[in-house]
Amino acid sequence: MGFKRHATAWWEGTLKQGQGRMSTPQSGLFDQTRYSFGTRFGDEKGTNPEELLAAAHAGCFSMALGFMLEQEGHVAERIDTRAEVAMETSPGPHAVGVHLHVRARVPGLDAETFARIAGSAKENCVISRALSLPITLDAALD
Image 1 (spheres, rainbow, N blue to C red):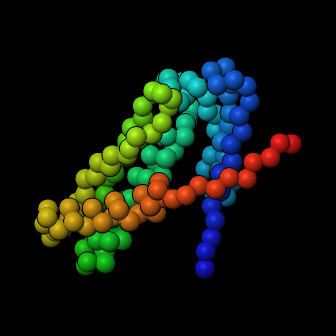
Image 2 (cartoon, rainbow, N blue to C red; image 1 turned 30 degrees about the vertical axis):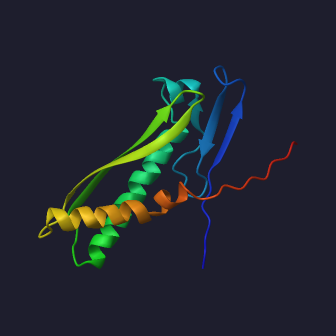
């Protein structure tokens, strides 16, 4: 049985002078959270799509790693993951990759086995796989 998750965003104005808001109505975590050129390319308070992608990837990978460790008979005391979305600005802003930094405390597990399981989690977590999925679009003017 499948399921869907969704988020919403609106934007008004030009790229540099405009602003937008993002919401996650199902969980309520974000409710009209601000985003803008300044939050995306500068230091203004608010969020941005790349930060949210990094958070989703870090969370997904950590859960997948915990599950895969469990499948092999290990229980992680702690998994800390930092996902860094690398961006380039020329010829226009675009993501060029994601680097996952993970440190874990898993009693009784050797480094080689951990590296193998972590590699599998990197390849198979939902967000890793989603980054290479086809994207569909339904666009219309109001």
